Length: 350
Image (cartoon, rainbow, N blue to C red; front, top):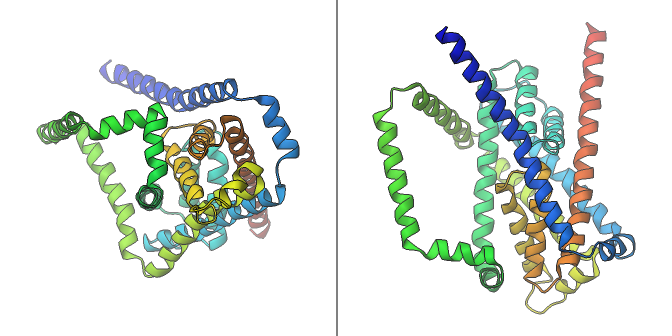
């Protein structure tokens, strides 16, 4: 009787968790897009999309997007090899990344789960080993985002000050950061959490957290045991250089962002490009389907710091996001076709 009740509770918890994972990102995306469309001139956006975009630069952006995924596939292969997963080719790593980014358009993190399962089955290794490398892969990305934020605060200090003054979100963040009470509360909360974890260290929940944390660390620690550390760092720079230039090259595609390139002190538009890139990168903290809504509004806010109106900023973000999404979807279809073809070929061989 007790085991049946416990089983039912677990089933209900899983259902609730699944519903939250699916519905929450959808609700966030829908709410943000609704807000976006109600605050811009749709007819002007249509005119910009039809007549005001140089799609040659958009094509370059799409090529950079594909290149970043290819580089990421080869970089992940280095981590897999360091973790003892040796049955994956460079092409196999790229195919896994293509499929993962396409599936992330459907539901956040679905692609991460799929690529780990795909590689674990392909290489015939434990799933936890592959998951650890995936976490390490994302951890290194987190470090890069922090570095970019720090560089932006230093290089584009004036734009950050305008953000704090102009937008209510910026003012709230500034007040929170400056309020010592907030830091006291955070410190007390962390201390209380540490004490509670120590008291209940033998419980199933805490042991599960401990194993999860250990797996995360093992996945991240692989980065320190790579035989080709220099190559890994080079590939990391390559990935994030592609990400930055995806944003920057699109400045040339629109007349209103093209003006930023010629502004004095903008370093040929590199500084505004860095601000827009960092704002867009930080939007991943809010779960949504492929960044829909969150990325668009973050980019629109960033462009607003350089006196680009909401409608123009929305047009820029919608075109860039749509074309990048098209690239992910196309590569995802290619990934599915490649997997199907190789499976049929292996069956014929057998």
